[in-house]
Image (cartoon, rainbow, N blue to C red):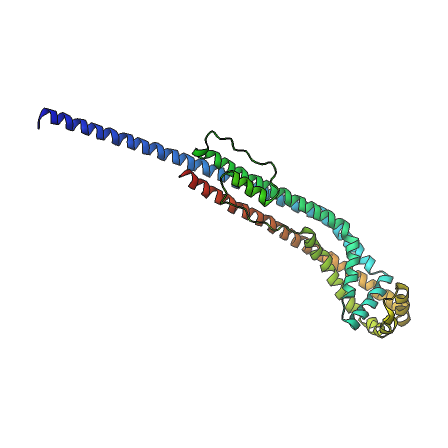
Length: 320
């Protein structure tokens, strides 16, 4: 091999070695950059998850406090409703309606008791409903802000967005607001599902008013069975021309049932109603609390799903 050939071979080896060296360095730098980006993404995701659970903890504490503070008043109103429904005039009306239900296969007794319960308990239940809905709404908004905030952080990490100003809308009240914000961040394929709001008023009405009404109506049917049977025939004749005024109802009941019978059964009915209300309220409070907490955890689950989709979508975008 001539001297020139040897020199050429050495030069080729040096060039190849240099290329290999710089390729290795480039791969190492790229790998290091990718690892750093992955750590930054995971850090943001972990921070968002911590904020999620912090929001859940705060909301759970607020809901429990609201129920603990307001349920004694709800119970007190329930007891007042029981006393009102067990009054002499009301008992006579209930006996008349039970007889009417027996004749017509109607549900007038339960409707009457439900209306009396509702009128007495409406005010504290409206306050309780409003406060619970406010707490749920505040929690939902915090998770919306957290989700969109995570999307913004990850968008800013994207090398393709370097130097760009990424802004977010201040109003995130609805699912459409979130989806619009995500679309503006380049996450058009990621959407939040349409959440079904919890009708707190319906939950309270079903667990309290309707439950008490059902128990009271059943107790009335059992305790007033004897006078109802006696009154049924008279009611059929007297009510042929339409509903009777309360004075006529009391006159009919009084004519068939002694004052002592009415008074003794009325007092027994009132005591049983009050006992029923007192016994059921702790269980009702727990049931309502569970339904509300289950709802906020369903909101959390949806946002966790969405945040994971944002993470996956961001990683795919960075790799392009």
